[in-house]
Image: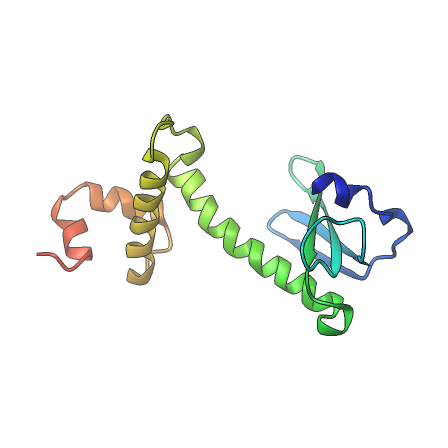
Length: 163
C-alpha cells in the first residue's frame, strides 16, 4: 500500500492546505496534498489519497527533520474540504501521540522484554488501565502519580474505591 501511495504523481499536485506553527522551541510546517483516486490504489472504497509532509526546525540544537506520511479516505472532494481533512488528521495524531507517548516514555513500553504468548497485550491492557484510572482523578503527570501510588500500597486501592 505504501509503495502504491508513494508512486502517485505528488510532484505535480499543489498544496491543498498549509499550516505553520511556532512554539516549544521549534517551527513546524505541515503541508497537505490531495489526489482523487479511481485506479492505482488497491484499497476498498478509496476516493482520495493524501500526502502529509511535516517539516520541523528545532531551535536548540539547530536541527531539521522532514516526515512524509500518507493517508486514504473514502470521502469525496465535496464531502470534506482540505482544511477539514488536515484538522481531522492532526486531531487523530494528537490523541494517538498522547496515549502512546505516556506508554512509551513513562512505562518504557518499547524496551519491554515480554515476547511470548499474550503477555504484550496483557501488559498493554494493564498500562492502559492504570492510565485510565489516573486521568479521571485529575492526574496530568502519570510518572509522578505512579511514584506516589507506589509508596503506599493502600493508595492504588483507594484510587479504585477499594478500601
